[in-house]
Length: 108
Image 1 (cartoon, rainbow, N blue to C red):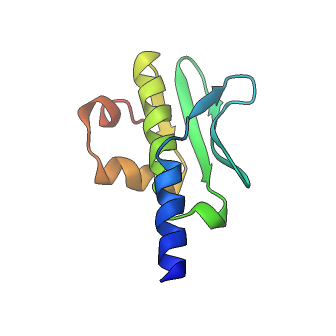
Image 2: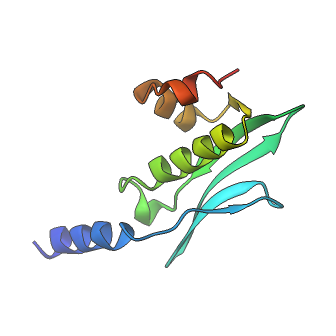
Image 3: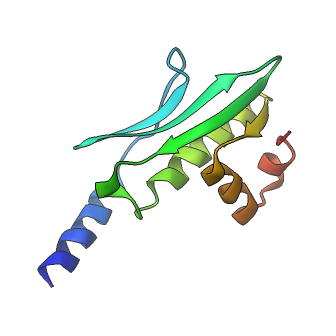
């Protein structure tokens, strides 16, 4: 029971996190108490973002953090009118499971 309460309280605490974008480092990230979750990308050609890596520290996995990073990064691509190359397997699955036209129409 104590473990369940700890997991639930950890999930509830995560509902208030903020996704930040470090343009210079080419990553979206969420600062966590123990490390940070990241989604990294490279600029490829004219207005194409290669989103190649998503990582969440093991203590925070299974809480939807990667989903928030994916949404923020894809929303950024929409705002920038950019195409996306999804070489990260998590992002490929995210777009497949969430076939939003704004996202799927940008995949190259």
